[in-house]
Image 1 (cartoon, helix red, strand yellow):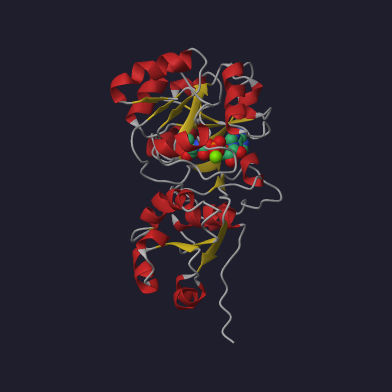
Image 2 (cartoon, helix red, strand yellow; image 1 turned 120 degrees about the horizontal axis):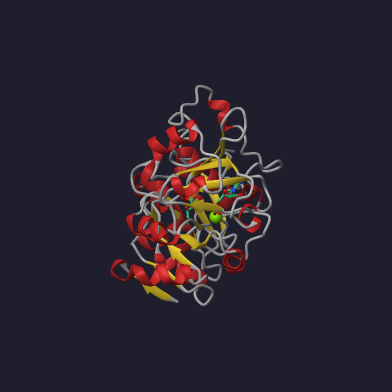
Length: 329
Ligand code: TXA
Ligand code: MG
């Protein structure tokens, strides 16, 4: 697979226009790009990832005009776009009748997910190619890629190229908000929170129930490394210190790692804030995902509000809600 840098962006444009798949950088995670109006190219995206075809894709655009061809843009959409785009917000909109999108993109739904990513190279790409689909550029079931190297690790030989623009800023996927229902509903938490979206009622976050998923993607086991992942509360750090064996690894905030006095090869720092924790989570999970040498990965939980909700959602999925519970007896 080719590695494309800024000076060679035209190659990426040509490849996409020819129906090939090119991974692209965004502010959240790397995406897997193909021309959204090309049914064959879209199908090959599902194949490259090993993604079930009942899980619809986000259409990435470079302007509101590009959406007008296939989805209904009303004042609410314009207002949110004004406020948050380009940026980590995906909106679910009603499809227009007689649109140009192949049914593969939306998995046959009457709605479509759209977003304008905040990355200059990718915006230039999409201006030239028109809308592109963009699921996260990982093998289905793996943590999303936050570097071009992660994309290569998962998809070498399966896609044509990756545009390398360095590590992504945010590290967790965009907030997905459904605007096709009476009360706008967050289907996937991200760094744009319900509060920022103007929700007066925090119960707007209700939907993350895996039994009746509104975002088809939420029903699949996601972000799951091969090694067992266990979350822990910072209050249990001393207990965890006694629990750890040589085959365990820890992903935690800097202060917690200091308290654990764990050797640096066996730890991955989440930095000092929820923001840096989101940025580092997937990279840490990938780094320790070696079942031959690693038995368990312990990951520190974050407070469950604001951007911490996105972290907790991804950690729950990676750990299957497996939580370290210290029994003091
Ligand atoms: O940050 C992101 O959103 C990244 C970057 C690459 O843009 N993309 C991403 O795409 O995370 P993906 O395919 O991994 O996740 C898209 C999520 C899935 O959970 C999917 O089920 C949901 O959005 N989705 C897509 N279309 C939908 C629709 N019409 N209705 C409800 N959920 C939808
Ligand atoms: Mg994904």
